[in-house]
Length: 269
Length: 268
Ligand SMILES: Nc1ncnc2c1ncn2[C@@H]1O[C@H](COP(=O)(O)OP(=O)(O)OP(=O)(O)O)[C@@H](O)[C@H]1O
Ligand SMILES: [Mg+2]
Image (cartoon, rainbow over all chains, first blue to last red):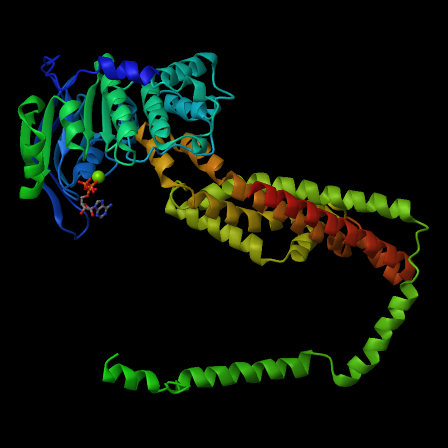
């Protein structure tokens, strides 16, 4: 299967040279509090370079999901500055935000596909990042090039043979790979993934992570992912950022940390 | 078990904890109103005594049904069914956008959502016969008035259930589409409608049953369909013809209900 091939090409924790000096994401003094609830983030600073692969870790409820959601304003930031792909995220109007989001591929913990529709139609939906109208709603109406590109994206995640299968007939791992294919359809410059491996069995979770890392690498896209699996965090990133106390509490190159150290980081919190 | 628990278990609670004077008065008032309504509006005993034999009399005069004009009756029944189909189709098609405007999270603005919900409430609360009367005045006697009345009645029902079905769909795919920069319409058409489709089809089938039942009585107020034949038959004391009409109506309604029920079970 293709995925196996991806796994082989995936660089395993190797620190690749910074491809450009410009940060893909730059966060300054970010803070967040939901209503009158506890302060989740206070004065968080973080820079992520173009083309790098960064793992975000932290105990449950430390605000990992909140942080990456705020980057594209799926959650509204409380205070501070966010620059993403050269845009001042908090100053964008609705149209500007849509344009920015179309450049960012987001993979969720759940696959978030329409389960009653085919894999191909779900991947075709990804083209809505740059097109609109009935021809983007279903593979049935999609233009030839769009269908071809969607098929190609499915091939890249090793699921070309499942194109016509409904999502509710696929396994969890396969569904998550379809979600990755939909994300590829966006031709993203930045890939953000929130525990894409969490709801899967160890093997499928690893396949999904390997696919993501390899694809991001292939297209020179930046990858920011959250994972609760320390071996994934180390293996598929070149830098590990740990959240704690509403700030960055750990920031190290992945090849200098051990699983034991990371586990200690969690228990220390 | 400790001693305290044993004592508690053996001790039965009183049947009535305590009498709430407000609740007691209200219950009493409601009961009084029900009895008063029954005595003033309901039939008196001697009306019942005279009425029941009359019903028997009418039923016996209906028998045997007169199939003399069955071709005309069936044609009229067919037109009635067409009226139901047309009204239902128009109502369902309009219910989709109306339902979207009324659905939380899909409506473009809370004010629009409130307006849409109010409109649906008006459509629903005014009875279909009243709509028919209004449209008979507006567009004249005949089936167009009936089609419009059915369409409005269907919207009052379907738009509300469409909105609920859409609200209940999984938020995940919606969020995924807005996260990739899709517009609202794309998100609705790609993620919401496909997920809500089974429930919306079930609602639509039910609406067809409802519309069929409505279509047979709209003729009574001149809005087209077989109802007018029934009225004429009764006015002319042609009870045997009326019996035939009632019979074919019954067959149509039961056929539509059975087919609809069967299709709904297949979808779910
Ligand atoms: N929409 C919301 N409204 C209120 N509180 C929220 C909301 N979203 C998140 N929170 C709270 O914010 C805190 C951080 O949540 P978040 O989901 O970002 O944590 P996380 O690090 O991703 O945790 P996990 O490892 O469980 O995914 C939690 O205490 C959570 O309950
Ligand atoms: Mg999370």
